[in-house]
Amino acid sequence: MPKVEIYTQPGCPYCIRAVALLQKKGVPFREINAPHGTPERVEARTRSGGRMTVPQIFIDDRAIGGCDDLFALDRSGGLDPLLHVHGAP
Image (cartoon, rainbow, N blue to C red; front, side, top):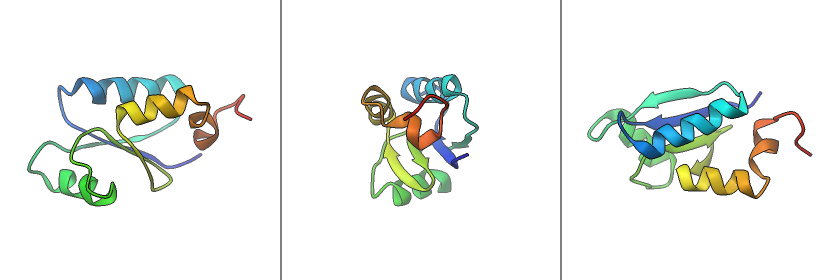
């Protein structure tokens, strides 16, 4: 199983969508609460190469991006292989 981490903040609709997609895929992930002004938010920005928004998603320490990036990766067929989801090529 890959290591999946997602930095979120409470009430963020994009965070909620991204978490729901990961849950639908059935992979374990670590959700990291990262509201503005917290060390976790600074960590997310540093790890993502300077992206300021949440969610920030990482699979095996690879920056995937935010919610739109995650859904685009899923639509293109690239997400399941990263997650080692059954049925992926």
